[in-house]
Length: 272
Ligand code: PGA
Image (spheres, helix red, strand yellow):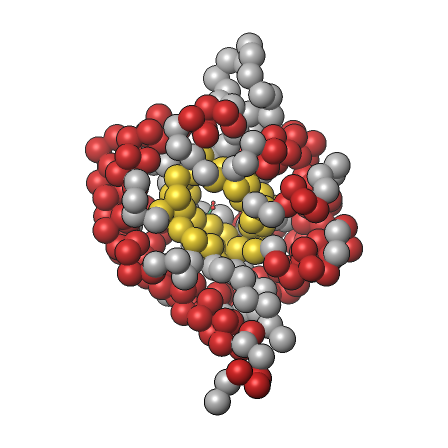
């Protein structure tokens, strides 16, 4: 029996645009969100300076507010950092941790990523934990080893009860912002490996209920096929999330795939 997980679609706005752009995008996303109801979980991750204003626009729309990063420290003398408490104070419910633009762009380690995931989850935030291999790692045949290592390191010391609000994002580095997404088959395989890894680290129940989403050049043209793969529970969307229409199209694909999974998860005797 397929396990019905509620699809998740997040828009990672990265460091694009100004406040006017952020507000207009938030309004356009909020206006389209109503058609999805509770079928899927939607979140927007604007740049830090615009969180509060975007949060006010998204309020009541059902689109969650998320940050693109969080400090591993609770508070104190950490210039330039933003704590989980501050994010909660601004109305954030979600945060991205371990994005490749932080791991590879800023040299953040597996250990730092793990400390961020731990504080995010302990604070009550939903943590979108990103893992993914580089092109060289994939070409060397190490993709699964790399993502398993990243996952193990990020979850080190966390027990299963802490992981209710974990969303895992498989984001192959070579697919991010390149226009070249993983093939649906590659994504399905990577998600399957990650789910196996969760089962090995924890148990089959946790592996079955944890959402694993795909990120990397996902767009309205490929979302349907990607989300139709077993174990692909939605997406983390960069470039295409900057256009509300494209983002809504992608969300629609996730909602349709969620509906199909729900139908196949209904025990046979309950169906006519
Ligand atoms: P992209 O980014 O959709 O622009 O490839 C995805 C991400 O970085 O989360």
